Image (cartoon, rainbow, N blue to C red; front, side, top):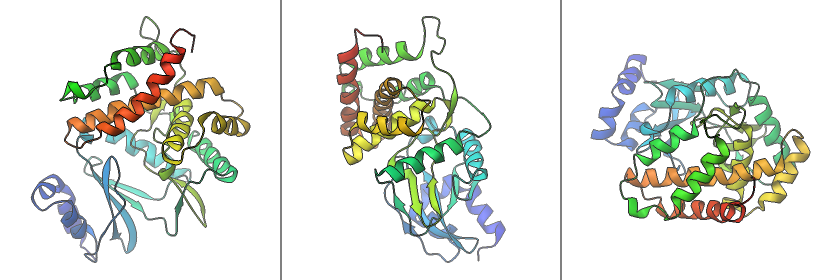
Length: 300
């Protein structure tokens, strides 16, 4: 096994090593047996299965530009809350959160849109929502951070300003006060972050967690399932409302298109950081635009 001081040395010099020997070699250096497996490409980061403390773990190496819009301290705070509540496998953070190691979930599958999986996902989120409140995730600050990375303004959709204003008018009043109640939010409830094996369902990746709204989580859930599994949003929202009777279906639907808008902004920011997500951004933005054009004259 790697000596502790060797591990610490690699972690402390992670930035230099990444720029000189590359991510794959860093993964091999951190794996105690020198063996690593590059996992399925993530939109945000690079992940590797390695051996750590004698067990299989997933190593997360941050992707391009994430230091500009991911709050690592906030991620670590909410991840620890999730681990304590049995929502997430054991996770360790090093070097201000640049290096994250999560215990590998054996024999896992990702979320299927069955009634049982939906109920398990809602129950799991409810458990996470019992966490101690922490730092807010400000969508306004996030939009501003993304906009600073829009290197090629010609890539941005011509109706960007319209949709942005509709979204901000929904979220904030004329004095800049929030129209929604701050609640704990996972922030990235895509189907790939729900992993199921013999021990139950697990929720991973708390990069975008913070005090926001659980309507964001449910909105993200249905938006992503429409994107990846072609699931009807309205039908899925109705099924979720049968389980969590506190939600307003119209509110969740509206937030689902706010999710589309924010991730479109994220994609243009990633494009500005050198990773081309322009097609992805346009697809997400178009969904939001169609919805907000339809309801622009209504009180949504």
